[in-house]
Image (tube, rainbow, N blue to C red; front, side):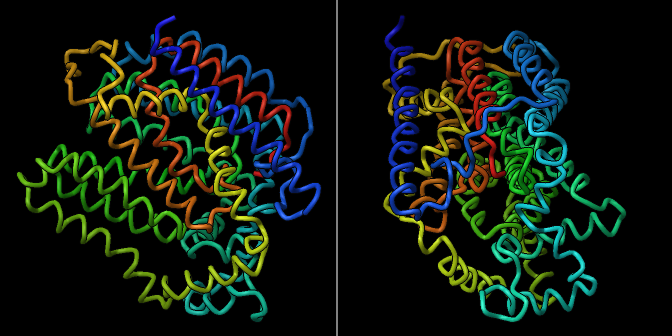
Length: 456
């Protein structure tokens, strides 16, 4: 065993120890003080070993992805690889969700847990509702919004209102919207990695993005949809600065603006966006029209909601009040500030822990030479590519850490941090022995979904 591989295993073991500590300490706090408001800390879940209709498909898909994923990722034409990654991610998310059955796994999530579909009738006059939206955020106001509707800007709820208006009504359609759109996040990340680093690293990351343990939550939460919108905003920005395309810059700005009106916390996507701009600064210098196009696109969604009568800043400050009115004001910061990181370790898996170790080594030049080789003439090996990928991953990690320190992400980060977690997974491109690490990722996801009844 090489020294580098031993260090990878140490990093994975450290992540496992962090999770173990979070479970044991969390159980003690919850049993004695009852202040965590989760039954299987650090996850919002309950211990419930079970099988379901999705079990055979999930096991077979995991075995096939481990056996054939790495070689196919290296050999498929690029566009075929993107299609295969999306198809695999969709099948993986669906099979894991269906372990809990159709209603519990997909159709009932956005009605029983996230409540978006419960308030559709209140948007019969959408402009009037937007003007009045902030008057119902804080508890104690007339007809306060349910927790998740109050906790997000109205673009999140309006998405499901629009689905209802075009005839795609009910939890089944809403759930599948989140699955199908959320699965495209892996494609967006691959596009960005190829544009900013190189194609070989993107190909090496592809199986890990498609077979991520985060799929346990990507199939059961609107945050999967949010993650995809944020990912495509960054992917289009990466294409804009590398292809010198003002049209792509405008489209990226449009999605960045929408991202901020889907979730308040996703304003932190600005950090990886800045990293993309820095990595593509040569393209910006060569095409001065890019920044104006980006800003023009960025202004569209905020301007539209402001003209409709919704004030983002007012709503955000009211949300903070609402947050501390609920369990957020009771959950202990001293536990969650590190237990949230255990949640991140679970949704990204042991391979990502090892990959992040190599990411740090790449930036500090202590990890030696990488053993990957370019697989296509269009993807030559360059010494800068691993460093460029490392900077992108670190920007996402920094956004996640700021969200953690803010105190507004206490618990349930297994879904809340999905938009940041998908950008940590490309760190797995640095790993040797991809089949072994993919096996660890798949086993973790299968165990989580079959031993726990997750809340999301």
